[in-house]
Length: 191
Image (cartoon, rainbow, N blue to C red; front, top):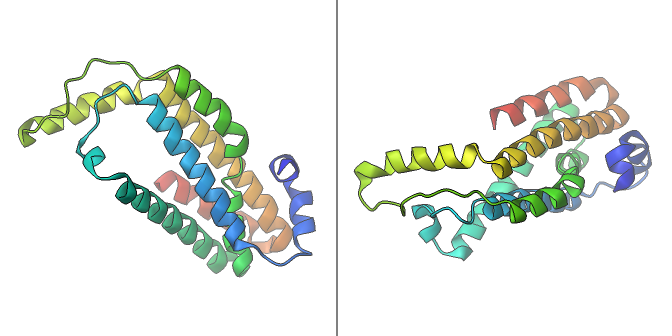
């Protein structure tokens, strides 16, 4: 993992000699997304919860896993179409999330130690009051140190992941590296 994070060209040169492992990309993407979600949950644990939290944990977990699968699969499909790397494109789609291995633990610690603190009324039952409550919730959450740290860490992960992706495509399909990395960055900015 250290070689991938800090010496990606070497990592992908050695990867050329082994068969693709798309399942490993899905595993990396899943763990990374779960780390971010856990950091956000830890940071906002003191705030009242919205109606979305009334859904049972199994359903929330299923929706989360489906979202991870779709985002990883979509990125892998785009990389496959742009590079022609086949299953290796789906492996690459997961490796771009690998920087969370470095960024995730400190992010989790800060989120656990410095939660968002604010006085908000419980989520209103009256639909007319919900928009104002959600605006107040967003203001409080988005201006907190912990949630801003999550956003900055995500931005750093996107750039670091872009470098890893560029190194991988440059090694495996050199003529498509700029195109694939540009598409990845556009997808990340859009999401």
